Image 1 (tube, rainbow, N blue to C red):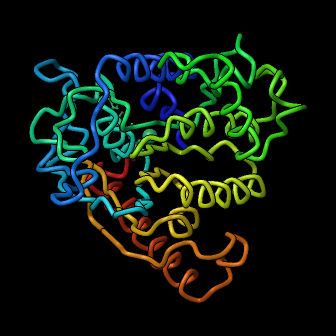
Image 2 (image 1 turned 45 degrees about the horizontal axis):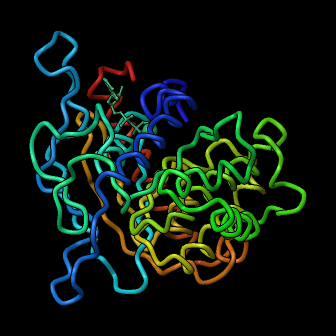
Length: 313
Ligand SMILES: Nc1ncnc2c1ncn2[C@@H]1O[C@H](COP(=O)(O)OP(=O)(O)OP(=O)(O)O)[C@@H](O)[C@H]1O
Ligand SMILES: [Mg+2]
């Protein structure tokens, strides 16, 4: 995790919380309908997408260039797609273009479609989990988890019942933890709250930007297992950005590898699904082989980038 990625990814917890609020507020204004099963469009499609920040200014910067990929909408299942690549290669840019969040949205060139519709802004079909803990500090765990339902106008009793269910689903104790405030929770617990708050809304697409990057290794493995378990329940398409090759290989049905300067996709690998807990899979030969070759690929990408930058990177 680079020092500047907090700035470029989310602008800190408060900005991220505002993104969540904006997302939910727009959900109310513009709910999106499910596509007919017969003509099932892809879950996500990028067609020749380029994003230039500060276009026409002296600070103009091409973050991603000509990025194209298609993620199918796998019926009653969904896929987890990991995005791996060196810092600054545009992983968060890709995710936030899908989310429809500014200033990444709209693309400078090309088209981003979600479930067959061009992305026009945030929507109820997409939910986002950031690395920074994006809870509202003045709300209890229960009120944080049910925030989106409140914005949608669900009556208090109903949303609290559902909220307590989700607090249990993410491995917190509804009796002990529901009334706590975010500052009374560990990092792992806060990330569980963030996951519950997103998944309770049952988005078809879940966007996760290094959600476990700040957790200790053991908690991180637990959270990976939790995500797989919840993902089986919600059957969504997940885009998961990580710097950990092991995490990308364990979680990913598919791993996209990105290179930098400009940001682009240079690898698209299909892998077996996470069929056992993370700790078991990590000793399996197919897992170790894929981890080794991806580490080598990332090292090559990083040394190419250094060469391009004249050794300054
Ligand atoms: N709002 C912005 N304005 C200008 N440049 C930006 C902005 N957001 C990102 N960038 C630049 O675009 C490039 C891609 O940024 P992005 O945050 O997408 O990378 P990343 O792969 O997520 O990096 P990290 O792994 O460090 O989080 C970086 O060089 C970054 O400095
Ligand atoms: Mg990032």
